[in-house]
Image (tube, rainbow, N blue to C red; front, side, top):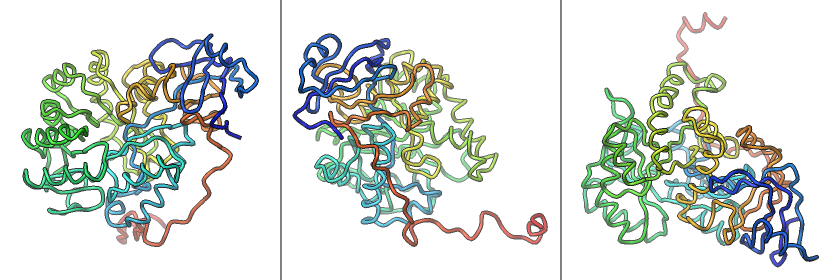
Length: 448
């Protein structure tokens, strides 16, 4: 049973990683209602009464809940862009997202950003969570991603005009201004721009820039005037430079930066969300799901070619955030929210303690709740994990849900005994290909 709202809860004898970057220490955490009332000796003193619920965390790690700064909660794990753009319906997308979001919470994620949502249903899901209709992590959200007619990463599947799935195509300043204001009127926390995209016969690494600096600045100026922040999908040097110059508040991916882009990011301390989990899963486990060796090598190369750059910006004080691209078939909900920490440690060379800061304190930037969540300090909201293990020794323990002994969100214990049931996708929801290959006579003979 969870603690009642009027009770205090004392988590005692635990080894506390507070999310600030400070060394692990054995101390108590006292929760009152939604907040951390006290820590350390003060927590022990104020938590000595008979009306206090005690949680013995002896030998366990107590830490802030994880924050996934790049999660697509409305996509429902498509295996292709075709499935994502042509096999999803608005009402069902909202219902399924409300069902999936609890998987994310049960994986120890107490907050996440969904920067672009199908049919803008992220706004309604966020409000349903805030209102108590749906149990899920804290959520910040964007609406439809802004794209030019060159498109994003889905090529010709995206229209030259209008709306498809999570994408809104805009052509000129008037359309840009209208769409930004509309999304802000509807209640987004973020405006997202697909600053780069893929085109046929592309020769450069990463993607190409498909927005001008002037267009990016227009979005940032309007959004900031109305109190909303802007996040960009950037996978080349020019896009990063232009986005930072334009005043963008956070950048997703930020790969293939040159010296100029690095200088802009470092001088402005622009938060970056590399989001390597999708690539890492494809590179390491793609064979298990039928991915080609060539495809696996392309995504492995994106990690290998960019980690030294990201290490450099991290060491200069640029905040890196952990995002996983959860919501695709390669990154299903509730499975891989710890994986980015592992990549940061193994590939960028961070200590495990540094990766935890990226997944907790720094993640508050994506929620737009800096100073409220992400650390275990007096006055902060009580989003807390009690882990049976030490993530400073083995970061992958955070991916083992059986090791999450307690999950507290907003000071209330989450009932982990209620697990999501198995479901059967509605007809037409999943892509149903005839085959994974072309059945020539030669192929047919190979299989005999």
